[in-house]
Amino acid sequence: MSLSNKELIERDLRTLWHPCTQMKDHEWLPLVPIKSGKGVWLQDFDGNRYIDAISSWWVNLFGHANPRINQAVKHQLDELEHVLLAGFSHQPAIELAERLIQLAPAGLTRCFYVDNGSSAVEAALKMSFHYWLNCGKPQKTRFVTLQNSYHGETLGALAVGDVALYKETYKPLLMEAITAPSPDCYYRESGESWHDYSLRQFDSMAELLRKQADSVCAVIVEPLVQCAGGMRMYHPVYLSRLRSLCDELDVHLIADEIAVGFGRTGTLFACEQADITPDLMCLSKGLTGGYLPLSLVLAPDKIYQAFYDDYSKLNAFLQSHSYTGNPLGCSAALATLDIFQQDQVIQKNQHLSKKLRDATVHLNDHPHVAEVRQQGMIVAVEMVKNKSARTAYAWQERRGLTVYQHALKNQALLRPLGNVCYLMPPYVINEEEIDHLARVLTEGIDLATKE
Image 1 (cartoon, rainbow, N blue to C red):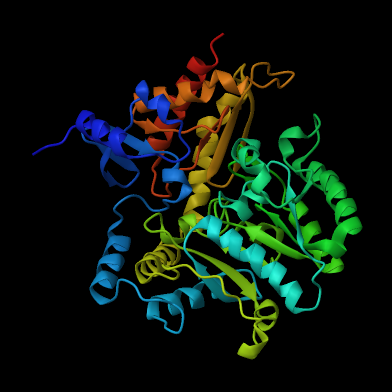
Image 2: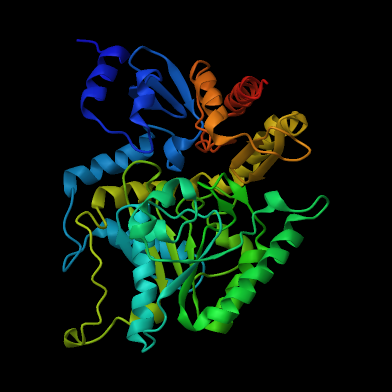
């Protein structure tokens, strides 16, 4: 029996509660039930196709139903689907840890598995606090975050974020973080370079940290791109200066590379562009090529050794999740790393990045576009009411929704963040498909910005 979109939508709306969604919208905004995926394309039950221009929430790297990742997961499924990682181990978890330690910034030598991005951030926060506690500094209990940052939806991760849309409702439940001005280069002065603005913004972070370092466990940042905050971007010099200051003041630096890792910014890890090693690095999303939930925190031996003690001291790090280090997820991740190595992905993405830039550069001249910005395989286009004054459209107008709806009618999945439209496609996209996305994006922006 063949199923239709209509039938699936009716069944869905009787039972499901979707993430990041006002469900009442679906009284007039149809859901899109997906039947299959191949490469950059998704197909619904009525035969309509869509280019997955946002990598299904930034996770898919090498296309849907990638035969190499499929084979790795199928092989692992016949061997071992899961086993607890407390007191037990398995080959995929060991091999993945070994390979990531080789690839990560020098000095990150321990891999702590978790199962999703928010949980990785939670683990890193707890690890930092607990480290200082074990080292006899219980007064270090606070975290510094950047304005407009986002680190996840669990309470600890939400507390160190700064996007009001997600955070404000739950504020009474959250610990209080210290918020520093962002190096977000959207706000630079006319003629000011990204480098100079990011450097200027660092002065505020330096002043704040010097005053409060004694009580601070760590600074947590999204390196180079504040993704959920509107794909806002900054220069690597900020990270370089922050690393030096954290060393000077005995404060951890946590790099949340969940969204920006695995080639999104042009290097395997965004931290490479600043030539720094964070104290803790969180990875997820692209880690498994978009196949299965898996995340981890990479840490140096210095932090690991602070927990290594006799059981009676009760110094162990007891964070745990049932599916930590799942073998299927680790196998998908290993296949993903194989593709990076064998296909010279980072080098090939340089060509794709240039194509993305060339296909969207014309939007700089659009009367309602304030900026087209790019880091590697991420391009963002910011729609504004007034270009010269950079006056934003009211969020209530939902201009981005017009772009989304137009895209679905034209074989594309675009999901703007408010007034910011962006492309973050899988790395297997071709030039013709990029041109199609750029054309649909331009048409959508034209429709969304009509007065």
